[in-house]
Image 1 (cartoon, rainbow, N blue to C red):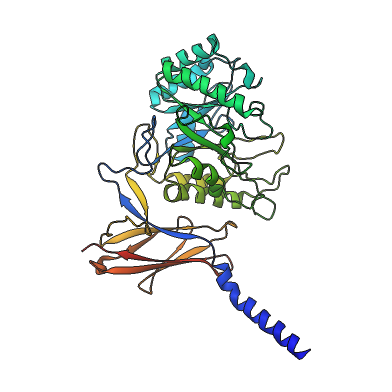
Image 2: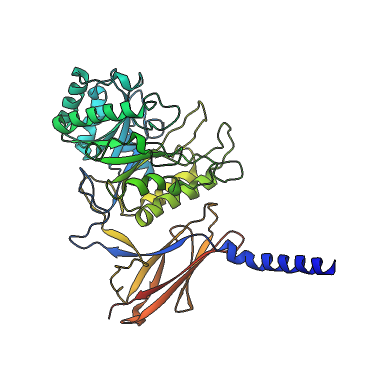
Length: 436
C-alpha cells in the first residue's frame, strides 16, 4: 500500500513540475522589420494587380449606417470608411446575382472607384444554381461592361462553393466546368478582371475538388468568420489567422491569397451575448500576423456589416469601440496599402530564416508571433545574450532593441511569452549574426 501511495506521489510530483514545460509548447517566432530596397519582393507570383510586397486594404461596409446610407448615398462608404478608420482603403466590395444583375448595376460605385484609384471586388453569385451559367449574351455583356469600367476588378465568382449549404457547389465537376467558362471569357474580353476562386474556411481543408486549375485562377481567396462561445474561446478552437492556414498552405506557393471577406464575430452565435473583447484581440492579432506568417496574403477585405437573421453575426466597425480601436491600430501599419499598384515600404523577416543576411548593428524593431489558440498572450519579454532587454504588452509584441554594441558578433535573442496568469506559455531563442 505504501509502495502504491509512493508511486502516486512521484507521478503527481512529475506532472505538477512538468506543467510549466507543457504550458510553454505554443509555437513562437521572431521577426525583424526591414526597409524595402529597390528590387525587393516577397511571396510574389506576378499575378494581375499583385503587389510585390504588402497587402491591399479592403472592406465591405454597405451595412454600416455610420459610413453608408443605402438610400441616398450620403454618406457613401468609399469616403465614410477613411473618415471612420483614419485610413483610405484600396478595395471595396459589392454582391451581384448572376443572370439577374448586369455588371453596371453598381455603375455609381465603379465611377467613384475610378476617381479614387481604388479597386472593386464583385461577389458574383449564381443563386439559381451553377447550371444557369452559360456561354451566352449575359456573360459576354458582363465582361464588356467590366472592361469599360476601366478599374481593377476582383471577380469572386461562385464563392464559398465548399460550404454544405452552397447552391452552386453541389456538383464539383460541373462547378469547375462553369468557373473555367467564366474565366476564359473574362481573360479574353476583360483584361482588367482578375478571376478569384474563394472557398469558405469551414469545413477546414484546401477544397481541392472545386479548384478550377492554375490557368483559370488569378487569386485565391477565403471567407472567414471566427465564432465564439460565451467564455471567449473559439467555437472551433482556432483563432482567426489559423483559420485561413489550410487554404494558404495549399495555394500560396502558386497564387496570391486574400481574405475575400471576414471578421471576428462580436456576439455569441444565435444570442446577443457580447464577446467583442476577445474578437478585438483576435482581429488585431490577425492583421499583425499576416505580414509575418502569411506574406502571400496580398489583400484583406473586412466585412463591416451586421446580420440580424440566422446566426445573427455582428461585425460592425462603428458599433463597438473595442473593435474599431483594434481595427484602427491594426491597419495603421504601412504594410497595408491604401492605393492600387503600390508596395509596402517595410517588410518583416523571420529571424530564424536560413537566408537571413547579417543584421545591422543598430536599434532594430523585433516582433513576435505567439501561436496561442486561446488568445491568452498578455506580454512578451525579450533578452539579449541573457540580459533583460524589453517587455511589451499587446500584439505584435514589437520592441526596439539597441543592438549597436554587437557589430560583427553572433548574439542570442530570447523571448518569453506570458499568459494572463503570468505563466510562460511560449518561448523562443534565436541566434542572430550581426553585420560588421
